[in-house]
Amino acid sequence: MSALPPLDGIRVIDLSRVLAGPYCTALLSDAGADVVKIESEHGEDSRHLGPFRDGESIYFNVLNRGKRSVALNLKNDEDREALLTLIETADVVVENFRPGVTKRLGIDYEAARARNPRIVYASISGFGQDGPMSGAAAYDLVVQALSGIMSITGSEESGPTRLGESFGDLVAGLFAAWGISTALLSARATGLGQHLDVAMFDSMLAMLPTAHSQLQSTGFTPPRVGNRHPVSTPFDTYRADDGLFVLAVASQSGFEKLAQTMNRIDLIADPRFADDTARTENEPALRKEIENWAAGKTVADVVGILGDAGLAGSEIWDVQQALTSAQAEYRGVVESFEHPVAGKISYVRQPVVFGESQRPDVRRSPMLDEHHGEVLPGSR
Image 1 (cartoon, rainbow, N blue to C red):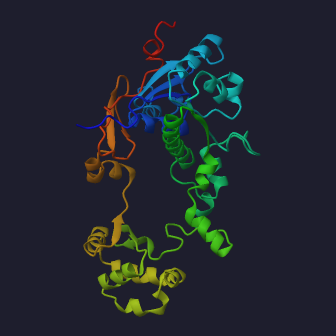
Image 2 (cartoon, rainbow, N blue to C red; image 1 turned 45 degrees about the horizontal axis):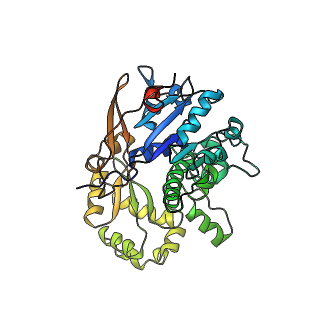
Image 3 (cartoon, helix red, strand yellow; image 1 turned 90 degrees about the vertical axis):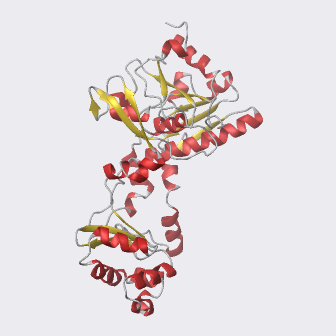
């Protein structure tokens, strides 16, 4: 018989808004946690962010799947007391207010711990709960700009380029979910929770191991190299007759196999391509050889030849192609629910497969305050 979902029995009080916090708690919900979303009486901010369908934010509903909604006015003494009483029954609190706000409201970690010593309380912010920038406004674009990731993304011609998703928020939410799961193990062993301080800035810095290694090795900030890998070559997008394909070779044996596949074994002895460093220094010359070979072939032809040779190459899918691909369907990563107003809404569940655990049933996103009486029976 399959085990219960990994976080079955864990209650999460979600005070967060928009993306980083809601993404974190969505991952916890996907793993079986009971997530109670506390919203203002006007609804969480992202209920009012597009895109919309029939007046419902698709963005909000994707990020808040599987949660229950309770509306409270946290400036009201009675509602604040209701929240603190609810925290007594919980395992986790997640918030992403600007540092200092929860203390002013009387719902900070100290207030929560006084009611429940085993509470794991995660605070997500742009720059951390203290430090020289703790009070600064932080959106994903700001954090991407300050973390260094924009400086190495794009080409010299394009200038610094934002990643195509809000990775500052998403990575912070992911690290928060990891930290919460880790802290829950400690709380189970010791009976004591702790305060988790998760900064978007810190989280993005943790995503730069290659660039950090380059900086330490050379003393220079890594340049923008477009789609190329900054160290390994050939590792980029290349042109065939009907479009672009990607090719990723990261070893000497892989390069030799590529040369053989191209019927150009002479390239193996060419000193310009003798090793990874030489190939990177002579990248334009190697690119020309690869694109001369790909000329007269379609992307599908090239990808087929590379695949038959055991080399890593592919076409470039758009978002729709990726989400509707046979691979995504087989893995079951895209799930959907029926919303009472917006109809069918699909989302990508947390991607880890827990082999011995049941996958929680798909649960839709909540209407505002839908579960007030269920979560706080007898109130109002």
